[in-house]
Image 1 (spheres, rainbow, N blue to C red):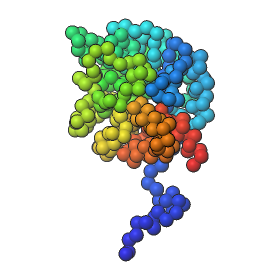
Image 2 (image 1 turned 30 degrees about the vertical axis):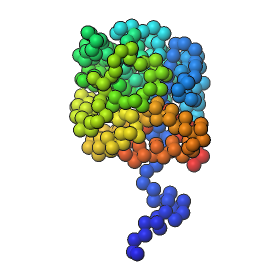
Image 3 (image 1 turned 45 degrees about the vertical axis):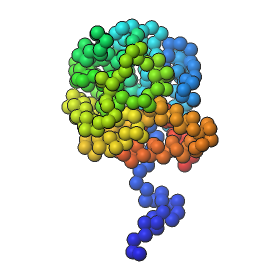
Image 4 (image 1 turned 90 degrees about the horizontal axis):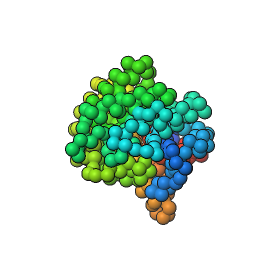
Length: 320
C-alpha cells in the first residue's frame, strides 16, 4: 500500500502537527442573562445564572480571567408591556448592564441581543394585532432598541427576532445617529426549534399563546437559509448566524461556503442542557463531548461560537 492514512495518526504529536481545525479563546462568545431581580440559578441550565447588576462584576471577572473576549447580553426586566418598551428604555436593564461592563472592562466586546420577546407581556418578538405578529410595525421598535444599546456602549447589536427588513431598519437608524462603527450580527438563519426550551425558562420569554413558526424558519427547509442570509447581507449585516448549532451544521457549511462575511453559530440552551444532564448521570465525558461539539462547528465554517460553555472551554484550552 502506497497510501496509509493511519501514518498521519500514529502519535498525538503527529496528529497535532497535521490537524485542520483549532479552537481559540477568541472564537468564543459567552451568553449572559441580566436581571433586575436577585441573582438566581436557572434550574434547566445547571451552572448558568441570571445575574443582578450587583453580582455582574464578579461574573465578568471570571469571564475575563478565563480569556473570553466577548459576551452576549439578554435582559430580564421587572415590568413588561404589550410593546416591549423596556427593550428601548435607555435606563433599561441591558443598557445599564452594558454601561457597567464598559466601565469595568472597556476592552470586552459587548453584544446586545435585540428582540422584544423578553420584554413583551405576550412573549412574542413583535407587535401583536388580531393575534398575529405584525412585521412592519415591529421594525421601528427593534431599531429603537438597537440604537438604545449602541448609545449605552454596545460594540455589536444582534437582532434575533426574524422580522423581514429589520437589518436595514437597524443599519439606517445607527448610521443616522452617528453609530456607523457599531456592527450588526444578524440571526440570519434562526430555525423554529425545540432546542430553545431552557432559554425560554432563563429569559422568561415563552409566548403566552401560539408559537413562533410564522417568523422563525421551518426546520424542513435549507434553501430558505440562503435567501435569508443574502437579504441580511444586502441590508448591512456584518456577521451572520446559524442557530441552533449541531442539528444545523449542514446549513452552516452551506452558508460559510457561499458567503464571505464571518459566520457565527449559536450552541443553544437545549444543546447545553442535554450535555449537562447526560454528564451529570455519568453517561458521557462532558469535556470531551463539548470540545468535539465546538470543533464540529468550527469545521463547518464558524468563525465564532456562542456557547454557554465558553468559560469552561477557555479554561480547558489552558489545560491543553
